[in-house]
Length: 306
Image (cartoon, rainbow, N blue to C red; front, side, top):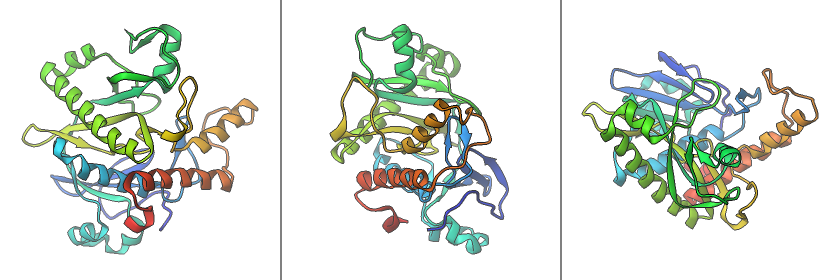
């Protein structure tokens, strides 16, 4: 599988993010290409992580299909042969697109991320530890780090082009979008999280939290977009090692974060760009985490499906 730091296709570049390039196909479709770029502490590393883009794309495609009974999504195809047939000008780029490209229908994106939290971790734990709240709303007292909530919590957030997203209350969401759309986002997000989390747990993975993104389709329908229940959009924990009261090991870029955190603690990196060079073993360990998450959730190794 080709390692890709960035794609350059003969299509109009619509947007370049930390990980993906988004190309305009026509008035109704976009092409999403997930590179192997990796970021940590809001800095994109110089070294790509082999297989990462394919994990994000193929795992999203798996979830789009599996969760389709819960509502429409934007995926048209994640099969490179289908994509090249539709867009023959990409034939010479086939090898770099294998496993990592999604042809999707356009929507009008909703300007909020729909975060669902099943466990108290990350920024939610940091806020709770200080104030006993989440997005300013009180949570039950006495919770510990990584504690499971009695029921998943819908916790919307603003979308940040750079830096961190900001948690907002459901009241703020209703004010911005209207009660009907806010409630539809809440119900759909919770249903997706519950169904996806149940499947993942049967496969040995706890989905502690995740973020969904939605768009409005041409007929006004709510459409699931972007990536779905991946190691980049979610916090994946190995179920057999779950132990509340502390942080948990995770199936994502934890080896990278740990390495960079050590450099910062030692004063060898200030946390800003340019990033430090990454040892081969850190890149390999990060790649292995992504691939293992894919294998456990789908039941197949990555290379077989890409």
